[in-house]
Length: 125
Image (cartoon, rainbow, N blue to C red; front, side, top):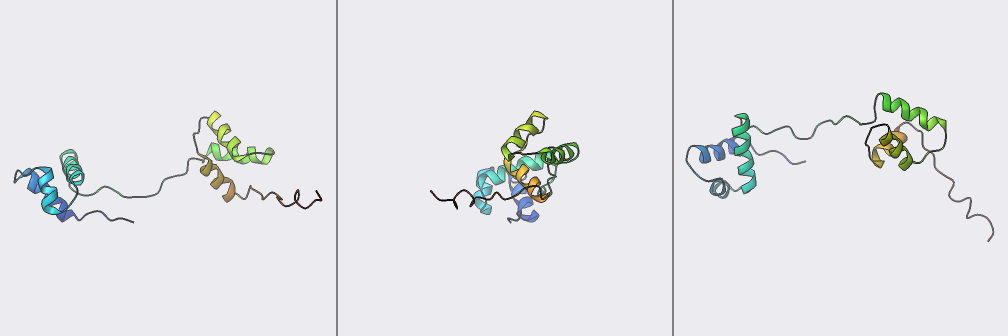
């Protein structure tokens, strides 16, 4: 995973632009960073008063939880389903999720099964 640039470099770029009167482009060339990076650092400094980087990555809670999770378990227990069908039914309930989210939920709950794909091929033509 990528790392944020050091705080020292960020402060030097901001100082060159704010105090020394350099443009963002010339400061970017001088310090060997991208122009958009220098512009973003300066905008962040003006907005927050700090040159420190923001948080990278982190935990994102799953969309299928709580009442939707209980409903989905009950729905799967009632009978046949397709994952695309479940995505549509969840959308009707007001939860917008993608196919992969539903697949992950169903797989983790042990609610899916493998179809016997070889059965129809085993018979004589």
